Image (cartoon, rainbow, N blue to C red):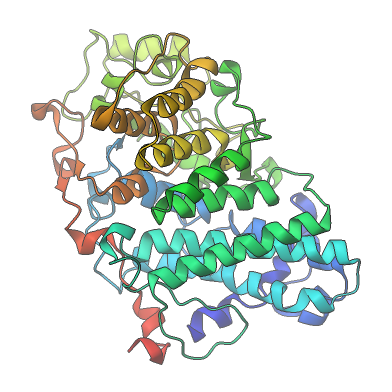
Length: 507
């Protein structure tokens, strides 16, 4: 990991003042020393803010935009319920690169998350000797630990076997580097990888408590974010009691959004957002931001020409009484090109009437989404990472796999769907495997487009089954594939050559 770590160190100077245009006025990365960054806690706070900024930066090519790329390429495109008319992207969408350790798509998440890890490690190593109050230092260290735990959690989902295939964690995990060294280092086991994630989060939560401090902005991390990461990591590890405990804690101060907020485009943070990334008109990546690839009202050609759509099968599962059904374009009886989904004149007119924010030259597709929009052109918007909705769904799934009474699981699903107003008519009486299917369906619906699809299918050990129109679906023939959990290296990305070529312990 010499190469990756040396690239990542002192990116802290992204040090980026604040999430405003001020970050543009700081010194270049290669001109800021550790001594400057850790001179005092005010500077160190900027370094933590730099971690937040890294999550929305452009890396290398145009479409690689920090966390948004993980959501779009790895979570949405490769999933089961997300359709886009991009046959030229079939290698990404059909997950044919998983075993190619030499391709950019294999290397990008490794580079991106280890860049976060490297910078978090620098903060953790240096903050105790920084001038400032003990409360400030405790809070800053807790934040860096939170970022590191999040990065390891995401890396484990991509580059490690699912827990049920790991022989209780004995299979390969990650290079769990916890300091600023750049020498050779072997892979830990998956069990030890999760042990470290837990340890980071335990320490972070303890430090948050001792600091007595809270964040002031939704894009900063705090105890609730650490608890949410704990819940997600524990769910992936099939540690269901821990997942349930932390899901309940994480959502405690984040009430579910109203119906009006749900229909507001998911580009502005609200009471339900536990953690997200900041987006503003003076900090945009223009046509290469996450929202420019998905926001239905974006002027970017990636949306105007290739709008993002829900799978027909998932759409058909949405009850008519559910407000989320109205966030996707029902073809009804209107004509459209069945092979691709391109709408005819009647459906197009109906779409523009219902959603006037659409660009006048936008191509309209059957089942296209209106859930996620942009706050400003071409792709400005805040990006969500954790919502309390996810915590409800984690709690429901964790209860189910602990064999708790079905009524407890049903109540959680009703709280998420009925009490929130998403579907005031919703009731759940299902039990057994039908109840698990209900959890999966409502997780797919609630979190659609937010980057969970492929990750969930991998965790559940469920096959990707996409159908073309002749089979009753709406996927292009080139994308209408079935991928079994045992295929594609068990959906596990290979350790990139750019790691193994520089890390002798992996050879």
